[in-house]
Amino acid sequence: MHFAYLLLQMPHGGQVVRLTRAENVPGYPALLCQALSNQGMSWYPEYTVYEEYCDYGQGQFFCEVRVLNPEGDGVHHIAGGIGMTVEQAVQEAAYHAITRYRYEWPYLAADYCPFRYFPSAADGAEGVYRSVYASASDHPDPTVRCLVEMLNATDHRAHLWCEYAVASCMSHWNTLMDIEPYVENGTLPQSFLSPDAIELPNFMALPRVGGMIPPLGRRRTPPVVRGLCQSPHGRQPESAYHFRTPPVPLPAGLGGYF
Figure 1 (cartoon, one colour):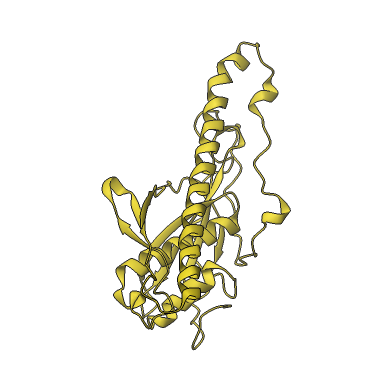
Figure 2: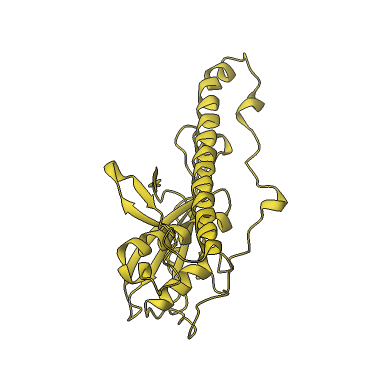
């Protein structure tokens, strides 16, 4: 069972707003820690979250997660994810890291591995990844077969909703760009180009990911020019891009809060 999803390659044009290792964070960060622990890796992955700015308050967050090599002095694996909040971007980045890791390391697909039925992301045409789902049709337990089928269907459904949400945001942004000339000539009020930033409702809140908030760049003067998708802040100091503490070792056994 396959389906393709677009891997959104976002530029790092925004400000770094969070540096975290997502220690003891449930969800995909914990699963990524367990996958790394099963592979004999030694360190918590490091997440860098950027706030990417678009005109009319339509920005979002991009998270880059780096899996360190066994020595902890280099990068072994990189993945990314986007979200409307810092927490959502971290969860998405961890998910994508697991699916790529699951594809690249045959051990995670072995019958005795707990990640055997986890989706993997194979390379597709034109930079598009294809999610590949493992089948449990040969498993003797019907409960396991149903559970795996539900996992695959739920993952597929989540991808479709994610793609729909991104497409909806881009459509909204395009609409605002289309009406800008009418605002400039006075046909429409200026308030049309100042919508509220999108916020997720409280019931969709995800676990906090901790970490540190680096210093932002100096505020720009004069104000940002519309149409350039610029952050209101200038370049950040070099320290904003680096963790201030050494790599943190994974605990023995299962990694993270699992």
